[in-house]
Length: 299
Ligand SMILES: Nc1ncnc2c1ncn2[C@@H]1O[C@H](COP(=O)(O)OP(=O)(O)OP(=O)(O)O)[C@@H](O)[C@H]1O
Ligand SMILES: [Mg+2]
Image (cartoon, rainbow, N blue to C red; front, side, top):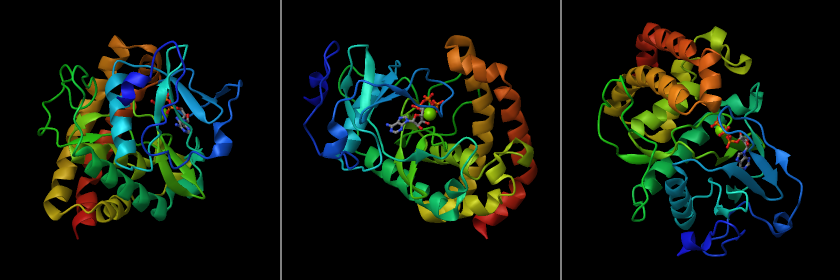
């Protein structure tokens, strides 16, 4: 029912389902002003309008909207609520009040507490994805799909993941993660792959010279350990996580190049700015430090 109420050409707020946690009456007032939101590399023209955010649709949007509805109905308090499509053909989602991690990162975004809390939020998301099936006629276009020339995935999808939990896609309040935004890349994936993606940024799995200054001296192994403990990974999963991380770097390079070539836009911009080389440097750093990270994760 819910989805049918979002009609292109009209702006609808859907009153069904639980009200979003971050929605207060004061935020419901309509505003004409559109304030650009920054923090992404890919979507041009993300704006805040009153208590809502407007973003361009992607081929994955119908599936994402169904998933956001599912998360709302399941009572997940950390995702934007999908409200409909506006008269410019943009998706309308609720604005989650707070601040993203920052560019450059704020010191409050890189605390151990923030790290362990994002692990618990990601586990919650994975748990709730278990009962989700797409409506008839809707397909995921993101997730663990094949990428030309990339090695085959190391398993079958076992969750619907966000697949892009970067610091820019997490909203904090008082230094604590409260929301995850930008579900454009959500789709069926391996639980461990979604975790490897989060740790790629949050550990981070990159050489110090390529890190944000706030994470320059971070002990990636120690932070991976904190995350794994908070998420609740067992010994086998910890070992597998490192295999998946290795595979992920390989795939990420091919996926990024493929997106740059086929989609262009922000993807091409990132590729031309050296994103491929950055992935290769990070992969080399990971291989060099893998033993130490294994030790930190498993001892
Ligand atoms: N629902 C929301 N509530 C609050 N802030 C949001 C919301 N959606 C987006 N933002 C803010 O706008 C910024 C850019 O939005 P978004 O991440 O959707 O764009 P993007 O270009 O697709 O990013 P990416 O490059 O990660 O794909 C985010 O970093 C965040 O700060
Ligand atoms: Mg983003």
